[in-house]
Image 1 (tube, rainbow, N blue to C red):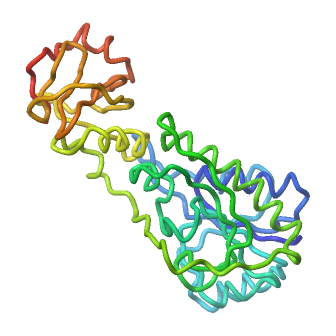
Image 2: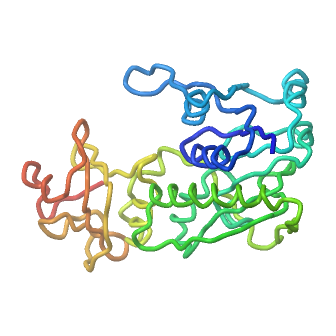
Length: 302
């Protein structure tokens, strides 16, 4: 098919790569504009922009698709379809209607659960047993279009946001290639009205550990919000990032360190900090941290 691809982050790169490998003619890529990043705050191309440029594909980075000029430029591409994966802009009706087969979205959840911006992380935070990918025929609503293909993946006690992100990107890449190959034969299934939830955008302040909450929720918080926005607590005057943690037996006043191996009491149960990172330092195992940075039994973490 003659396609446009619309996506921005790493998740989208695997999907664009699969479309190219399948022999589709991706004539144009739409991505978010470059953004300041790193210590120098220099503008850097988004992952999809960089990948497309390396493959000699035209890249467009409009801040909006609402203008008649942008919509006319899109129509002029004469597309069979557009594939959208974590693009970051709302598509006006004129854009949705321009390709002959419309716009297909690769969404990282089992719709209608977790419509919206952060479905991967929200599924882990909520303690869902599974998630997956839905290939959806886009309409004007927020992830409300008809479903073409759906496939699930389990969420286990070892699943974190990074590993689930990568697994869903691979799954999404396979499903969109399949959906395009069988498009004319696939039924378009209306999403059920029951079970709708919204995966609101992540905020930085969601990363702070509140020791008054149950340990099971905090353990999911660590898995769901690593690497971004990151999970942390306060040790005295210093912020300590928590990269991995596990549930353990124990009780006490919330935030109290219960032993000499960073077992911390929660609102119910206890959380053992396994992998951590001090400000300005690299990630390390908790045992390595404690050799040079004492957090003895009885300490209070905030």
